[in-house]
Image 1: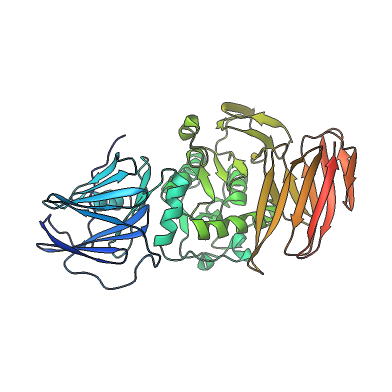
Image 2: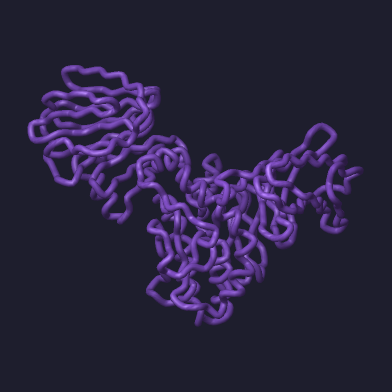
Length: 462
């Protein structure tokens, strides 16, 4: 494992100084040095804050929950050990070393490098790629987040940053720039001019930003409104799935965008709420979503939107689209065709933006009725966030002996249409309002009215 040699510095650059003494206050350890203090605060058993200052900074603590920390002071070092990490501070030069629970060194931090690394990237978060992440806030506090998976690191980070804006349902529509939340990061066309290369660069930049914990990338569609029609259409398609979309003036393409984007409104709202609660970006590089698939790290032109959907944006005028399809079985929502993963998929460039639903997933699409697309035969669930009640509607599907079971607990009264892909005609359907079967597509459509707060179960016998 390659170790990064960084140091945590606060607002004032301080030279390394000898350790004099330390004291503890809850999760906070204050180390007195010859020319100031070092602060180590445990936020969780796998996340800590480190800062060097001339004097202790009074202010809020990052965790009110006690973290179990074993302290061992020796002649050469002070060692602080939690369930997952051990942090040692060298008394002679204040070097910090981090080890995992097995004693293997994860990282070593020496003077000067951390701030320079984060500042050079103009980011406040860096995923180190070796099982940890590094971050810095505006006050100069630096943070170490241990994973070992990237999502676990992001989930650790969310507890150390200011609360993320709670978006309203209308915020997933086309926005005026004045309504963009403070966390929005505006994606810009390379060179300021619309082109195929600029569109491709926006996709790659959004993936890079997701690795830097950017939760709300925003696409400016005004830039593309006067583009040649093929390029303009592809920009609109990308905008239909982008987390935030805005324009400086009314767009001629606004109606086309809305028609493509409206079905995903509730899906996007749900994942914005997850971003707020857990720190996961909506746009997820394949390496983030499929850490056990080494080939996923080599693909930088497609991404997952949440957990269920894989998007392959069309960002060139080429006649074919080639990309790596990760592990799983995937259904092209436009054609209903199934593809097996762990291979490079090459397809004629379609008119639409390819969206693939992963096997064992439920995808809600807004409408009346709301559609719930389910690709069996694995069990699946989806928790749909309901902003009005601040609750979750729950949808479950999966095999249950000789039956397939569909279960709905909706917090809002709504009509539902289950679209169950790639199944044979059922022998019976119990407790549905009505159902139909598409022989050609082999898709089953089951219609149900879900009352608010009620629990509805439909059994399918095949």
